[in-house]
Length: 252
Image (cartoon, rainbow, N blue to C red; front, top):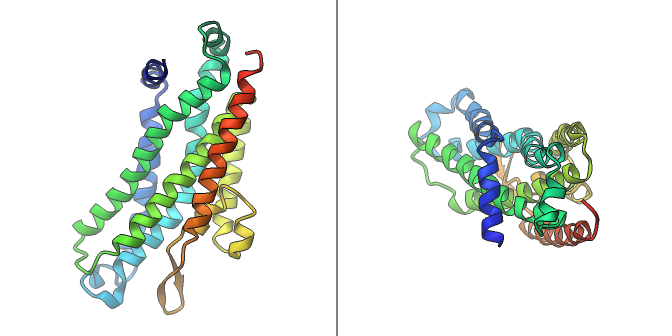
């Protein structure tokens, strides 16, 4: 049954203009990340390890992600759920044996796969562009892949939050407003102490995943809180399951 339900959600996506939202999400991160190319001396240092070209590019991406993802994930979740509110889809699904919580879980599986693909595409395209401009110094694969994996987790937790919010509140402007506020919190968290950023899940966890930071002497490697991000993913998954189980017991 779940396979058919997931396939049905993918069919809905074709009519919900999901592709433009995902393209905007990927293009926004890639475009903002590429501002590193305009940094004075960047293109002259692509073959110089002391110029830290990969670190600058990774630092740009780690600022571009929290600037774009919160609002676009809110839009993506809103589009998936608003169709159910407008077309009385919750009641229709329930009469077909699919309670509201189950529908939310199916939507998370289907659209979550799209979120993962978009996040991986962002990382891969930024790496590809760095290679195209001629960066020849050693690629920091561990830090790059670790950051990408952490952002996948944070994006999924944030998407799940907006999915639940959109499912319970018919006015989708509320979710979009939370998304705009989330951009502010995510960017502000980059300047917070680690313990304080943990107090603003999931937006503050974008800062916890940052692998580099700009200092007076250039870019320096940080120690990302990967375990904290993993804990966020586990806690978010458990809460999502519990809340959607409660949805199953309610009338559509």
